[in-house]
Image 1 (cartoon, rainbow, N blue to C red):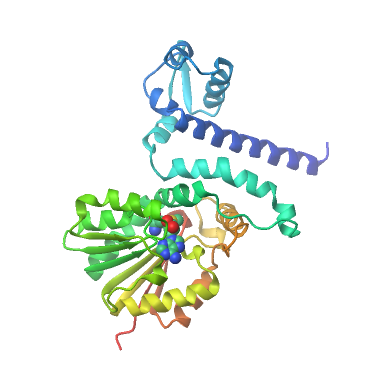
Image 2: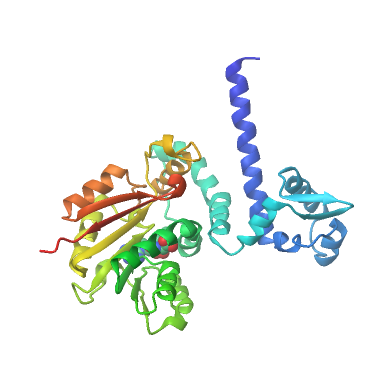
Length: 336
Ligand SMILES: C[S@@+](CC[C@H](N)C(=O)[O-])C[C@H]1O[C@@H](n2cnc3c(N)ncnc32)[C@H](O)[C@@H]1O
């Protein structure tokens, strides 16, 4: 057999394996199988508890989950493996939304690539579920990497008033006020259903957090009021021209010496320092976004640095998060 053919087969098999992993994980979330298999159970028990389920498909699910080492089979019973427990522990977190995003939305979008590239069909709008639900939840997956850095920055630079643009479910604002009780935060969110969730989730911090359901460009608050303005995981919502306008607006909202913090995955990161020696995931995310109306994909590091420079920010720091999953760019508004 030809070496090229073998390489292609290898890629195909690993694609199938990874797709299988995603489908199994996603289905396990939807059907709460990870939760159920935290305690051991036989297939018959699971079926008895879910009398409308398809027995053959459950059989396949259990078999796949076992060969993917997500569950173990012992004395006629199934139970989560270490990896399965990690998935169970992650329930309700960003990873679940990410799997759903990949399993349901990325595949169909990439299947249209040839037609999109030939411009034979027009770009899609981001699907409503992606827009309302998944994107804001999926960014929670980066919270364990982001939070320690943000906490350190806030402590060192003594932020008192923080503006979070495109705050999603206000995950980081909540963490900030829990850790720094005198801090006040404002979260802006353009998507009404996401803003409603953020408002409900910050209800008990009403004295400290205000959620405003608005497009950032319509936000008319006191200028020069914030020590820090965060733009987390959303620079890619803005076109190159809008990014300049946005940073100008943020500059006017900051106190002199105030900071902007932009968190974003990047295209074109040098792979050599990464733990996972690949830049494919970020590039694919960028590719996926670029297939949609109004999205320019992820920025390059140089584009971010140029943007901050062009809009007059100084003392720019580019901090890679662990595994280079994302970068945090911090910069200051000049004092005079
Ligand atoms: C990927 S989510 C990130 C949420 C949060 N910052 C985080 O890191 O978890 C991006 C959010 O930005 C919001 N957004 C996009 N454009 C916006 C705009 N012009 N004004 C306010 N919010 C916006 C989106 O609705 C979405 O909820």
